[in-house]
Image (cartoon, rainbow, N blue to C red; front, top):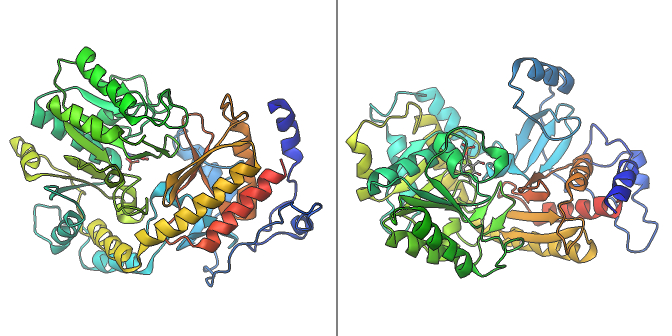
Length: 480
Ligand SMILES: Cc1ncc(COP(=O)(O)O)c(C=O)c1O
């Protein structure tokens, strides 16, 4: 069957997309006439009242050639013909020809308020004009105001913030603090998780495709409480027992920390099985360890039901790490912890040149205000629930959709060739992604096998956008 689909795929959608408008070309619009009653018609993007300024820079081909010559070969791109995106406005992106795309990936779950949200732009521009950089060795009001505002979003004793430039840096710092605080080295992380790519975080990351063959010590990878592919289904307590066993058999009995995402993002939008986190937190604390919540993707209202992903599990971590959505795309990360744990960094000098700089923290403060003012958490909940329900109905229509999961505007759609064996539909997902791009939708992809659509748009995504996305996916699937 796989072979047959691969043979059919290249012919499935041969019309060239229009380069200037968001709608179909004449040749595509002939497809808009359904042959059969239940066949979907080519969907149209919701209207949007914004025209970007004309672009006069180099073409996509010229940029690609320069990238290939001057950038690391590790710098990769989506799509056979990569897009040159030159403008953004809220949930939309524009290419060099002014063609509009619905952004359903949000710069990898990073654009929280919307591309170039005017209040974030104002905050950045105004602060840049006044003072761009001085280091934390001098006082400046913005870092303190943002730390205070951020701390107000956390429960319990989580009140002390340290700013970084990225999620990797935040997790490196969190792991080091846990090791210093406990005097232990062993860390437990969850298989299929992603926590960054520096020396400590690459150790905690548990997917071979993101691990280089360099020294990574002291991390034990526990069974993934994956409700779709995991051996214990949705029984969180059975998976939690593995952490207990790791501590008993693989360590001195004492550990530094446990680190996990509430919803694995890079791993394919996998929600931890219910009951897992409370049980593991209790096991880790009995072994003297600290519990670290990696909220780099699931934080800042993305999950809709809560502001932080861990809250859905009824736990309070000892350390929380953040990045991505915190700055709507500006390089900013943070670690929050208790005053007691934070003190460990005073044993030596810990310093980060750019961490907490006025421009990034001004952006962060604006983001927090916008999430509140524009009720983006509520929107993520309402639109995300609607989108999930529509995607779930697609699953009833197409065998290739093995699972629809996630919360709020952090959703995953896993494609499989066979629902029984769950064989990853790797080539098929690439094909559908290309088709959706041609229809004007940029969707993400991930999961260990690269067969999961990741839907993590800016939180201003509307129900009309959700309808457009699902109709386009329906259309692409119907042509396979
Ligand atoms: C959950 C999680 N933690 C940490 C990171 C690392 O963040 P960064 O790429 O900003 O270093 C990522 C990046 O995708 C992530 O998804």
